[in-house]
Length: 230
Length: 192
Image (cartoon, rainbow over all chains, first blue to last red):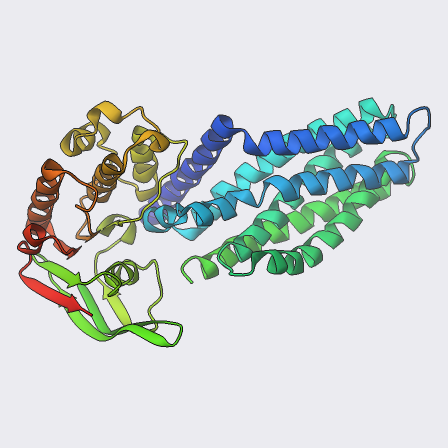
């Protein structure tokens, strides 16, 4: 019993250490925030200019916001895994740690970063396109749930391709089946949040996204453990 | 402590080495020698679990690998944005051991560089940081891959001192072509 408790304390400490390392790296380089921030801002401002003087339909708004979220995620999140392999620091983690804590530390950081970026992007989108969401709580919950799912999916994709020789082709092949169901759920939930669908259905789809995120987060550590030393 | 049975590694169609069998016990220093490209670094990576062998197997009896086994690799990169002290803390948190930052940095001659980021270190300073990180958990088995390659005479003496100390509490596998370091070994494994 005491042994199990000490093991979980050690795992928690490892997860926090990896999270802190990622956060320090991001705070000092600001690569992820700058890339995603610049892309998000340009996307939102472009949409606002294109739709100037028009009222965007909820369905179209949902689609455009999701495109911006997905590309922001694709630009920043895979770096967490790929950069370690490219710079050779992944060997440090393999020597000092175990796959599950490393996976959780990186995924939690990605989820936090993506949620921050996503909520900011959603607010900017609403402000610049002069939208009035039918339900703010639904829009925020759908954004947060979608961002955590995106972080889970993109991190998982990064995990699987990080040590592959032909990363780009493999990443596309793995990302498509992971992201398409998520996009379908996310667009549906946000469409309701923007007033083009029943609010109840929006909440159901947000719940489904949370379930999808849970599934991805549950299988991620085991897949990472499988590729840890291959 | 370590038993390698029939180890082999192949790149493409040619074997780098084959049928390597040896063991290392506590108190021993095993020196691995060989010309450039003979597979010394590859062997250390395989023994350390960072690379899969093409054939054969490695059995390790060092307890928790994170603390029981330490590697000091020739081409080990660091996190460019983390300081020397932050590397020590990160390693200690992950390995669940004491950081001993001040003690170890003083020992390897990096006490004044604790606040420098890895990107600001010279190759010799990086080699010293690798040594500090390698001995941090008091490992049972220490594997060093050409640890003196980027070091000055004082640094090379430090490597020898570390190997002698380590042999009193565990074992050392030392891949080197340096004659002075080679004399530390009770046994020599010749590759190539």
